[in-house]
Length: 314
Image (cartoon, rainbow, N blue to C red; front, side, top):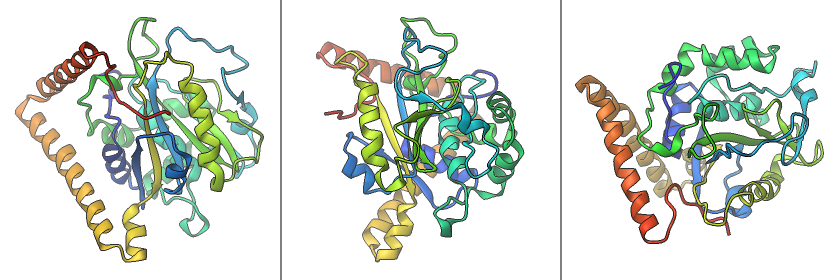
């Protein structure tokens, strides 16, 4: 725990339940096991959340990232419709929630016009921080009791989701969440550890209909900066609630499958965590899970593999 924020699991069910708890309507997350544009686009994604090992020894210059271009003007725009909501990450362990909020708050709007109903609480937060610079937005996020308490209700059970990047050395294994989404038909990378949103490609060249085709090469280039054996990546797509789509097409089996997923993660994350906290055994539970995960990593290494979240990047 750092600064009142716990680390959360990189899991589609956890992220879905988190945004439900924040009041977001008809949105969920799906995990992708391969970098396949067709599979991603089939979900009509609103954006993606990417978890990766933070390269503590890799430094970008202040005026140019390693890929893409910083777009400072997008944050400072006087036009409310053109301004990108971007917050600096000012506290450890908040990057998962900050990444998903970076998509949600930039997609907020009337669902009939293709926007997301983010609910009254996040709506008030967005309005309150609308004209703030990035650092003050980050402070406002860190100091939001509602967002922090909701985030903390999903305590992690894996050691591979720590984002203590500001204090890590080059030999430490630390992990970080960032977001990619299309805003004003422009592909942006939203990373609170960077000084501004990173634009990939020309402004206006990435309408939502081609988001998958545009973002996959960017993700591939990022992954290619790592050694060939590094497989600890995780990609979550933010998309429309698949229960809504199942109802619209009369897919009873698909609807029940999605309902079952919601029931399961709700029972696990709320019931088990509450029980452990009540018993005073929550920290022991976390430590036991970390030891079990580390054992799986060591077993894989002994067999010639690499541990962590695996994703097909071929």
